[in-house]
Image 1: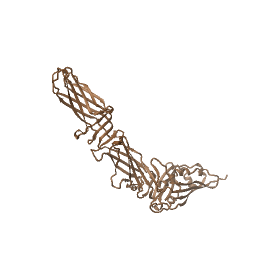
Image 2: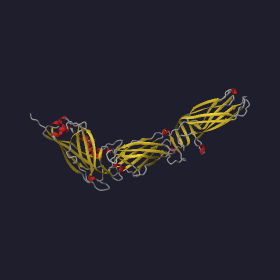
Image 3: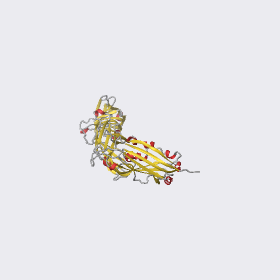
Image 4: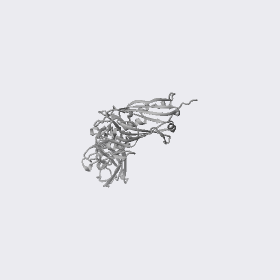
Length: 539
């Protein structure tokens, strides 16, 4: 409602389109004449233009709400939240190779467990599908056999297309046993592979097995058992396409602010919002297959002019922590997005709006698996993310007392104004809105030094508020007519010839400073004209 009068005052929007100040500058030749400048009727929709932030909503009872919608906030993709660090391992193992007649062969398998971690100690990884990664192995043995073949197999790493386990083969031949040690070095991209973990017990959680099989061919070289075998390796540059299991707790945040443009021109005064007038609606979209709980690090309303300047916002009443748990896709909805819609009707925004806040500031902090149920199953894909959008629905139901708004517009008189001896502005209003307005217009130079004003009595009521009935409708019962004159003499006109700015200030109050509602059928008729006196010079 304040913004409605703001539009009246600052002559913008539809009102500005109807105003024709050029008529004052180019009059017909007469010693005194009347010029109509505005003669129009306005409804609530004429003073609000729908935008990405604010739009006007007509409720089922025809009352009006202003709806403020935030930009959509996005978390990082979970491929950036869940980081799989490089994995390193290093093993040494003695083994015995029995005496072998030439031409015969013997196989021995050495097994080494490798634990894969994605950064959270309580995680249970069931499967990991990679889109990037590299496995590197290096080692040596002092086996002194002419012909030896090393087969490295990891049964839990499966090729996504063929379904076959990862296998690598390398020769460890040592002809005549002349080398003290035989080394090997292997490197294989694993971007097309997936890890399938065997979590049969806590001790094997997140483990895969490196199977190193030595196939030794008999020869005449001396037996020097026991022999040693070493392997050093790493999984590096691991990036997942999808990840399944219990993934543990990860934190992330969503931070933004929401302008309340209704109060953007406020410089002082009081407002009392009616009960249950404001709803806070939170919409969350998640493609993350984990339970996510949000709290707020801060959520407050801020006014630069009205104390206490900052009011903390609570979703479920003062002092109750702001918590919300969102819906997440289940295992049958991998790659899909699930929406959560929460209407916090018990919020304390009516208290926050009593300071006429310029903005709401908030930081949401999300945590996955807040309950710590390690027996549950989660999933994420690389593109999984969470988005959040807020809406504040303010049914215009409030009482206003000595509420002051101010705006500045560019302004310049036409030189023909020098031929005018005096200007009498006459404002006729037939007001169907429950709002009083006292208005002052200051003319200022380009440095904002005030040269003069339009209204000699700044407390004069220009627009009389219509009377209002009782609860629960708080409807206007009749329109009110008010006529106001403002006179500019020739001396005062000279004062403002160099004016470059108009500073427009309005003091607003609801009828009898009582609670009122605004309805879609309210209108105001404004008739603005001027009577101009012309200087006539006789030659």
